[in-house]
Image 1 (cartoon, rainbow, N blue to C red):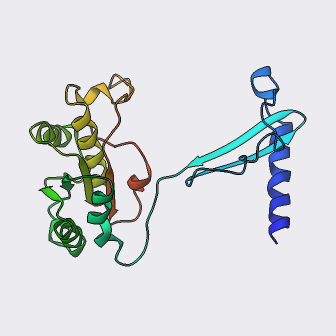
Image 2 (cartoon, rainbow, N blue to C red):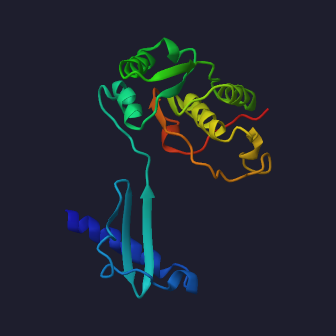
Image 3 (cartoon, rainbow, N blue to C red):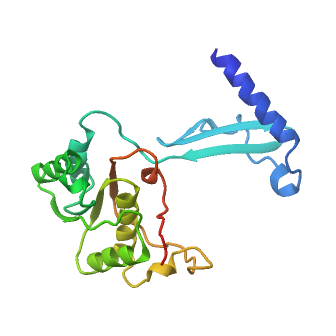
Length: 216
């Protein structure tokens, strides 16, 4: 079964290759399976598969967010922060999730592992530039070396903004927003460790590096 599936995949890639651009930038092969034994797997989260045909180079790379799934994994966040050397965490959630077991499990884990934390439960459902500005002011006034979001896409997106402006306090919200509304500046500073505990299924914010804003 594996060989049949592999052959189908190779056939598809060859069909794509035959109809692909033949300009010098894309037609010159720089890698062959014989040249490197590392062509199959790069790192623990990067899958690289290559098809070499007629001296052309085709590479597919998937660099995915690490996802831990299973009963009780929320109770491990405190240990995870300790292992990363994080001692002070900002926990982001909304008023509804703040009353639910997932947040309690996360806070209990932080407490048991002696990780200092503050809870920001003013996350706005469907965040606006005004709600983002509020959390930006909060992180500017405090010091955190790690972030934890417990909730849906709104909490996770707000956590991304908090993390970004904790590292870039001198910048403004629109500096990093896409044009034409924002300036589209690149993020040049390394962000701090950030863990998401999704309580919903659908936004996939835990797997992306963007934050959505309802700009008013």
